[in-house]
Every structure is written in C-alpha cells, then in structure tokens.
Length: 207
Image (cartoon, rainbow, N blue to C red; front, side):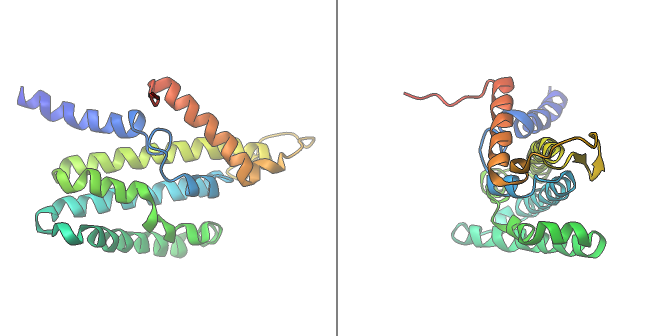
C-alpha cells in the first residue's frame, strides 16, 4: 500500500500541474509573458525552459529550508531565492544564446515577478517535502512551457511563415501582421485556454 501511495501522489501532482491546474489555461497566471514572447518559437522555448528551471530550483530550495523560514518574512525570502535563480538563467542566455537573450530583453528579469513561480513556493513548496516540490515545479513549468510553444507555433507560422526561423510556406504566403502583435497573441492564447479547459472539463461555476 505504501509503495502504491508513493507512486500515485507524484503522478497526481504532475497531472494537476500539467493539465487540471495548468498555470496559464486554468489558473490564468503568467499571461503577460505568454503574450510577449510567443511571437517566435525559439523565444517561447527559451522562456519556458527558463521559467521551468526557476520554478523547480526555487521550489526545491524553499521546501528544503521551509522549517527555518519565519512566517513574517517568507515572501521576502521567496523573492531572494527566485531572483538568484533568475540571474543564473539570464547569465546563461547572455553567455550562450545572446541573440535570444536580446530578443527576450527585460522579460527574463521579469520572471522574478511571475505569479506562477511565487505561487508554487507559497501554495506548495512551503508545505511539502522536497521530492514532491520538485515534481510540482516540473509539472507547472512544463504546463507553462507547452502552452507557450503551442501558441508560438501558430503565431510564428501565420505572422512570418516560419517555424524556428525555417520557412515552411510558399513564396506567395501573405504574412498576418496582427499575429506578431498583442491582439493576435490574445486571440490564439484565448483559443488554447478554451481548448485545454474543454479537454480537462475545468470551468468556473457562476451563481
């Protein structure tokens, strides 16, 4: 029975973060960055992986020291931990992927204020062991990432006729300029939110 529980709980945590409680589609968090970086697939991948790393690393750290964090300063503690890992991501991109770092600009630094990262520390990591916090961080990071990539594939294809900067349409293709801008991002993201909620049957109930 204990073995079954050990395997079932991580699976349920992973499933919740990936689909049932998807941070973008269900919790509606991280929308600003989702709109800002999804005009190109490479930007979405970089941001998604960066946020995933920060969520996992910060959740792991908060969980590991949770018994030593005074309740009155826990939010400040989260910010210090998260900002440290964001700096690591920023330095990594600038060192190895300067073009992508330039395109993302300030949005990498703004991971510090991403509600998904702070939310997982406060809602989960501070209350659970490291092993479960890592799974939760991975699930929410991947849940954020796959929505970003899906939206960016549609937007880049329609806006530029490319995917990962590789031309995939004919020379007669007319670019949809609106898809490179915020209104196009809102439209595509809205469709994906509707699709994920329809598949997971997760809807708000109004009185």
